[in-house]
Length: 205
Image 1 (cartoon, rainbow, N blue to C red):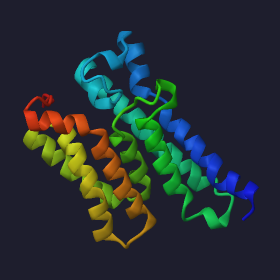
Image 2: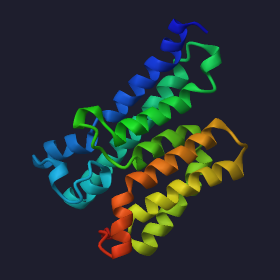
Image 3: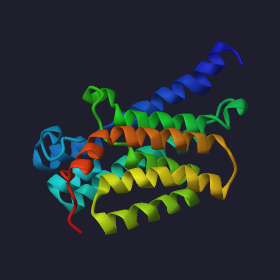
Image 4: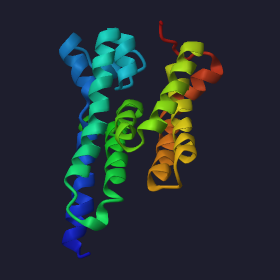
C-alpha cells in the first residue's frame, strides 16, 4: 500500500472521525437551552451527565443522544466507505477510537471535553452490540444501587472488554475496548478522588 492509499484509507478517515467526536453537543445544547457555558456549571464537564445535572432530565437525554450519535455516525461512515480492502478489519476500530478521543479532547473546546461514555456507547453499539448490552446492564445496576453515574460508567467500561472476550474471540475490537476502558477510567480520575472522599455527586432517580 503506497503513501496516498494509507492517507486515504487510514489517516484522513481517522482525522474526520476525530472532528466528528469534537462536536460539543452538550456545550451547544446548554448554550441554546439556557444560554450558559456548561464548563462553568455543575461539575464543569462538557458531557450529558452534567447537562442532566444542570438542566434536567430531558436536556440530559438529548445531550446523551447527540453524543451517542457521534459514535454511531463515525463507525457507520467508515464501514460504508471502505476504500482499501486491506483496511476493512482496521478502519472501524480506528474511527471508533478517534471519535471517542475527539469527544474527550475536542479541538473546538481547547481539548477539554466529556468523559467519552455516551460516544463510546455509540461506537460499540455498532461494533459489539451484545457485549454493550452486558455493559449497559452493569451500568444500570450500579446506578440503581449507588446513584453514582461516574462509578457506573467506569464499571460498565471495564465490563465491556470482559464481555467481548467472553462472547467472542481475541479481536481488534477487544483490544480497542481495553484501551477505551482505560481512557474512561483516566478521564474519571477526579471523580475517583471524590468517590474516595465521599464528595461525589449523586443523581436523583
